[in-house]
Amino acid sequence: MKLHTTHTKILADQLTPVLLFERIRKKYPCSTLLESFDHTKRNNSYSYVGFDRMGYIKSVKDKIEFRFEQDKEILEYPKGKTVSEILKSIFDRFEFDEYDFPFSTNGFLGYLSYEAA
Image (cartoon, rainbow, N blue to C red; front, side, top):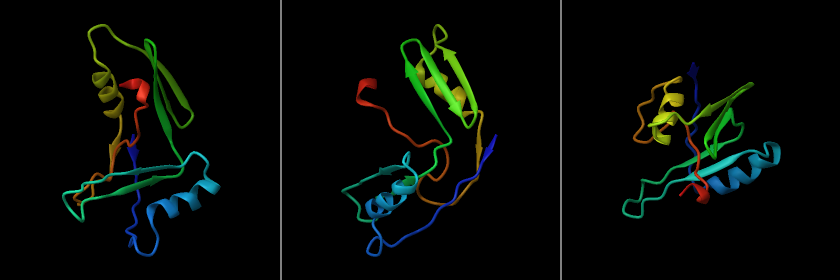
């Protein structure tokens, strides 16, 4: 499946990522703000704002729930496979546009809850 992403460069002195996120989440309650930070370099911090998630992957006990748009799939952990291998098998189902940026613009973005550690 081919997925397309869009990007917009915004000068931080005009509109900060947090301010943008606050505006977006009023209309899209499931919006997300993810920020990177590299204190060693001035121009090496990026923000990702997602406002209409297409799906999710959730791990509960011995199963992984994968939902993408209207499709839902429950996968059991195969014996001898790691969570990383299972996630890679899901990720490999998708193709993304290629951009020439020094940071990630395609793929899956998300978080792990503290229970996952």
